[in-house]
Image 1 (cartoon, one colour):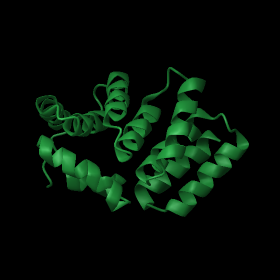
Image 2 (cartoon, rainbow, N blue to C red):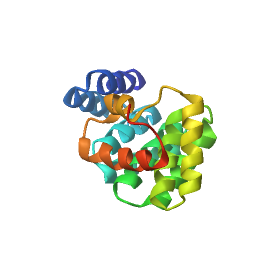
Image 3 (tube, one colour):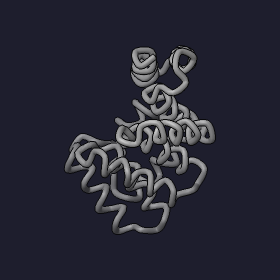
Image 4 (spheres, rainbow, N blue to C red):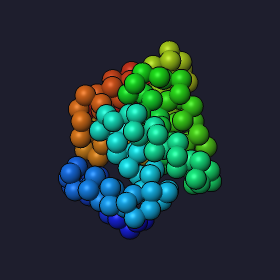
Length: 169
């Protein structure tokens, strides 16, 4: 099940083949509906596809099953809550993801976006600067290539990040 879930994630990230990715996630969860990798990875993809309710349910289930391996689950929650405009819960989830992996730029990107939408501008800008310190090549455009499959979802983040000082190019 774990191998199927990892393959699904790669297919979604690299090929943007949504139907195949979800077929593999479904197969992984059919083999083991408590597989944390399948739950958290599928939650992340579901969140970016705009299926926030299912994403939240799967991410929360993954956290309950494995409270020490939560980074992807919190990333999924941050995206899903941001999409449904619960920016405080998005901020909390992104903060937990930052705590789990402080050297990874993506949790900080999500944290910055949530802070910006909570009108915590100076904190959002500071977090965006940390993103650029961790990854000087990080741009909205580069990130959109990876997760911008549904433009309506991605644009919510892009607008907040632009406001925080993340460059488009």
